[in-house]
Image 1 (cartoon, rainbow, N blue to C red):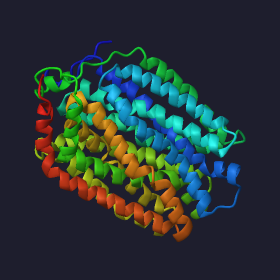
Image 2: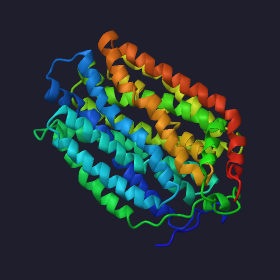
Image 3: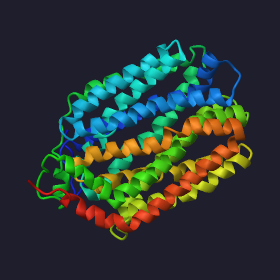
Amino acid sequence: MPEVLEYSPAEAPLPGARSALVLLLLINLFNYIDRYVLASVEPNIHSTFFGAKESAQTLAKMGSLATAFLLSYMLTAPVFGWLADRMSRWLLIALSVIVWSLATGASGMAKTFTLLLVTRMFVGIGEAGYGPAAPTVISDFYPLSRRGAKLAWFYMAIPVGSALGYAVGGMVGGSHLGWRWAFFFVTPPGLLLGLWAFFMPDPPRGQADAVAGHAGRAPRRARLSDYLLLARNRSYVLNTLAMAAMTFAIGGISYWMPRYLCNVRGLPDSAKTWFGGVVVVAGFFATLLGGIAGDKLKPRFGGSYFLVSGVGILIACPFILLMLRVPFPAAWACIALAVFFLFFNTGPSNTALANVTHPAIRATGFALNIFVIHALGDAPSPPLLGGIAGKYGWEAAFALVAMMMAVAGLLWLWGAKYLAADTDSAPRQLQVA
């Protein structure tokens, strides 16, 4: 069925945009389901390989499961980003989704902790092929004026998929089937989505920017020297550093929250499902509203995407600390508000990332961003926070989380004054051959 133009010709998405967005949203959904099934069944895995006794050392080892995934993800993402700038992105996406889905199934078959660590690394390699390519496909379908809201829909899969991962892990892993079946359960849908991606055509690179009046023609292939521009792009650098601090916070919260709720606060296993529900509702609306707010404010404030991101995450900080002191069930309100404002930046920050990079190096820009935010963010945070919690208590661990959120907010507010100029200059970054 042909898509109906809802906007003026200059603002209309390119043909095929809607079906591409739906498929990428579904893939991203299972991307995060696969990631957070692990967090949900982490206590069960701990019991299998280390027994019931907990220590700073065993908690740090359990945190290394997340780090293994993230290390392989961030180290291979720049390679796949370079490829995504030069080959069919849908082919790369299809192969990547199939690889990570098979590796997820293999996680359920691991008989030793070391084998489980290896399978999580292959999940990271698969997701590294998908991560840099997907947002550039959406960016090439939608012009600047609509890109924020559409990327917000794509990134909405983060809270929803994460929550479903908690729910699937809690229900399947907590049943008589055991934690291994939680991984088996999510493997077939990923394989089907990977096969679907094989049949999708690539959009022309940079054409949506041209339609929006930000580029004269499709970009030439990037040269090695062109990538040095990213290091001199103020908005790109500050955004990446802010996202790294935010990712540190989200990585730590998402990985350890099931254990904190059940083992520290004494809630039943159903708290994992409740937490998943909070993340779905609060994260869903926050991600969409953040993207919409960035688009709506852009005509009045050139740095709107950073302004929305910075203010949102600063509001979230005190609610993380209140969660530690407020008794349940009232503490659920603190968690909900923290999650809402924590996810408010997801759409705007990623939209800014796309808008300040030239289409010819956009996939590599996303790939380098992935490398930095995970190297400084959620790769070190789970084992670090686990070690801190084991030695000093969970209040100290979550205090560090709140501090990193504040750092992210200040970096985004700093970058707001540069964003309009860097967005305007992005299409002229590369000299036409």
